[in-house]
Image 1 (cartoon, rainbow, N blue to C red):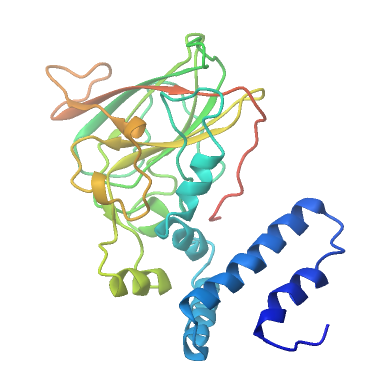
Image 2 (image 1 turned 90 degrees about the vertical axis):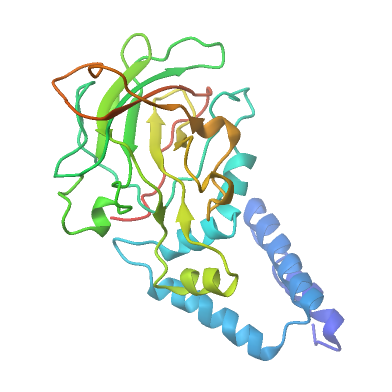
Amino acid sequence: MIIESQGDVTRAVVDAMAQTANPRLKQIMDALVRHAHAFAEEVHLSEAEWDVGIDFLNRIGKATNDKHNEGVLFSDAIGFSTLVCLMNNGQSGATETAAALLGPFWRMHSPRMENGGSIVRSPTPGPQLFARCRIVDPKQQPIAGVEVDVWQSSPAGLYENQDATQADMNLRGKFTTDADGRFWFRSVKPGPYPVPVDGPVGDMLRAQNRHPYRPAHLHFLCFKPGFKTLITQVFVDEDKYLETDVVFGVTRALVGDFAPGKGPPPWGDASGEWTGLNYTLMMEPGEAQLPQPPIK
């Protein structure tokens, strides 16, 4: 159609997409166009502001590489990732463990390990962590044979792919639950850390007077055929950034009890200060799918 006025534009675009063969794609694109156009009209977007927005999107693409995904970071920093995650998980009663966003630092093919092993692969100062976890179904029955990917940042606030001083796959490992649904491992207690701020997301946070910090946490990705893949995080309960997580990922169910250890550690020959974590995760019946890794 020939555009006669501003009011014709949205209808013209929606009409042009009307023959889209895939019904889900048609639904998504129709809503995207309508809401995007309504947004521009609501704020009366200027041409200069449109230029800034397009440049921002271009910079997100340029800042994304094999070791960093700026697009995921942007989605996280505006709460979009958490919203989508919570919309799509928990329908089968898995209230004890809510899902959480994947984040931009998950890698596939982390080393397989025996229960009780340490995921520390290079000198990593910090209190030792002894984690004992269990995976159950919504009826509280244990789930054996779950592959559990664990990853975390160092206490200094860097994932191993960001830090040349750490060994490859430091603070990453893959465990398998036993007949009672249990897995356990050693690590170091994680610390809070800032998300990368040298790209467009950092510019956005500074313009909004927001800090860039995430509270300390462990990542878990739990996979077994017949169950919906659980992607979640468990946060250190004493962390000062719990209320102001820059990516809005903290829910009440995800705050763990990281208790200071007393006496000798639960296993092994470790010495010095240590922290214990006992945590139960719940998986829902469903389709097992692995996500696309945000970095290589």
